[in-house]
Length: 153
Image (cartoon, rainbow, N blue to C red; front, side):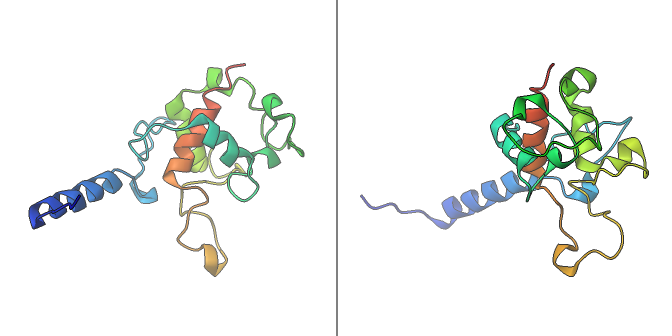
């Protein structure tokens, strides 16, 4: 079977692909209001399973370095620098969790040691390889927020 596509069909595909990627907010476009980020960073729902992986991955979120989560007791080295996250979904809305993960300093102030995972405001003397980059992607943030949303108790 031969597929023929004219310029109009190819243009439609390119425009659709551009529109899909245009939905992702750049770090500087994220709006914080009253300790919340109301809009999804990607326009796509988060995947709690992928979020759990990013949360525990020492090369991504590495959240267990500072927080304990009972459900992840099979993982080593839970930290106690930050609060335990059991029941965090009962304490914060998804929009509040999104704000905290995106840039906790916008919620808790500059005194927090928690990094902004989707922020370019990361301090001074950043190694050149990491300049202009976020710790997590916008979809990673949505996935971690979806995972945290499962921590009801």
